[in-house]
Image (cartoon, rainbow, N blue to C red):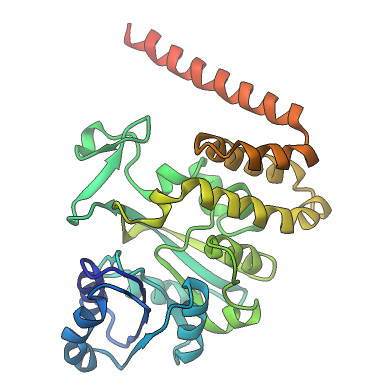
Length: 318
């Protein structure tokens, strides 16, 4: 559990691990140079953690960033499997038990196992999204209920069957690591978390997909918190730029494996997010090397599909 400036949520995150139905757990908390009261909040639960867990480690260190912090925890861990929990999120009570039991039925070709996640707000209340991706609290009025539905443009059968494949990761159908458990040795084998890029979860999924398989458990095992200090909410355009940079390092591999279309569509999707953030210079620089005409065609086609969808919905109502 890496922690950075989450004094309001860190204890809730820790209790989410304490209350797991699975007994044999090693908990490693790494406070990555927090400037708030996170350290004191963690210390308040230190005795409870020592009594609850098979092993408990708490490291209060200087800031190194998420990837370096996760790698440090990975090396320190002693288990066969490893899972992470952000210090502002919360596990569902049966998460570890469900993941360990599922792994027990898989062979050594599997390195990653992921479940679905709900969204919660700063007060821990479940939140949903309408058709315009706006937050709503009434489940009956929601278009998107969970992380799977909101994040991935998917056909349910194809999504589950192809989960974790390189094609799915590069297309944006897999890449977030909420509710994800790994085989520790496989993580070490692929080089662990990469530095210098805030989308370390996507990069790790790509590395794993080149050598191993992954499986999706179609049930909610994680509560992903959205709040004002959430990095995804604050830096969506910047995160999209990091995905573009990651895509550029993967372009040669995609071209060699017949994934040019998937690569291009993912890049164009991220470019639209960057444009919405006002980063015109970054997009222009990218399109000088890639096809600006194809990007324009993609934008127009996407807009037409959206108009047709809304028009069709209006006709049904009338």
